[in-house]
Amino acid sequence: MITHHPKHELLSAFVEGELPASLSAAIAVHAEMCEICAKNIQHLTEESAANFFSPDVKTYNSYSDKPASNTAATDELSYEFMIDSITEDESIAELVVQEPLEIEIKGSTYQLPTALRSMSMMGWQKMGKLSRARLNLNEGALHSSLLHIDKDGGVPSHTHKGFELTLLLEGSFEDEMGTYVKGDFIWLTDKNTHTPHTTEGCLCYTVADDALQFIQGLSKLLNPIGAFIY
Image 1 (tube, rainbow, N blue to C red):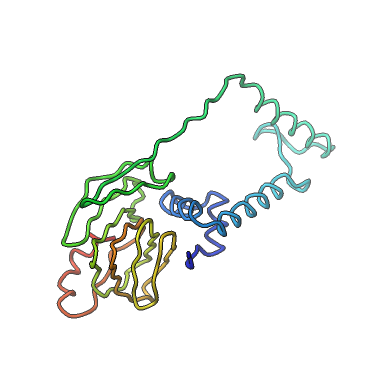
Image 2 (cartoon, helix red, strand yellow):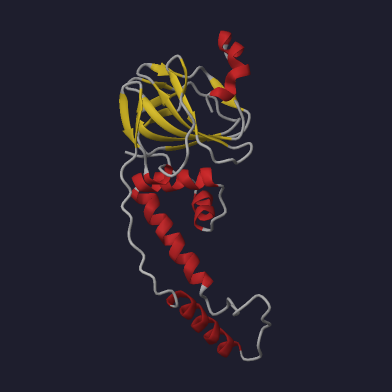
């Protein structure tokens, strides 16, 4: 059962279109798997729409329009203008059914969630039991990736220079804070330290704004390549 969800502030920002593409995709994928968050998003969307069409919100036919003295008449004209704009296109839109996109990693096949299927992906890079493929979103310091960890694999104990979002797409893993299953939305910062390990193997969607920082023993020698993983 999914026990880790996006915070309310993230869901609100998602509905308002305020998140970068990488985080919006993470919310959308999580909502595909989580009925609770899907309902919360629907509620926030309805609430946002109600606020937008509230009588207190004035709209005009163009940016150059100025408020008229008769507000009710202006609102009515704006509404009619909007409906006319929507209905003037007589073309028929055909529903395109998207085929499931499968990826294969080290003999395991996975179907990608809908929100990730249109993203272009770089080739897989492998280091031991870890495999990572960057997603080409061109978001500067934000790096989005698919991360695969083989059975009985893990990541040495580390913290983060920025934030790290891990959305579990398949499989499970555990760390000092608990066990995570498909659909869990795990948000960590420089205040968190953990040592992820998986028995069955897992595939994750990750977003990070800086490299991780190894903190114990010989693994500290890996810090120069910490950006490889996230």
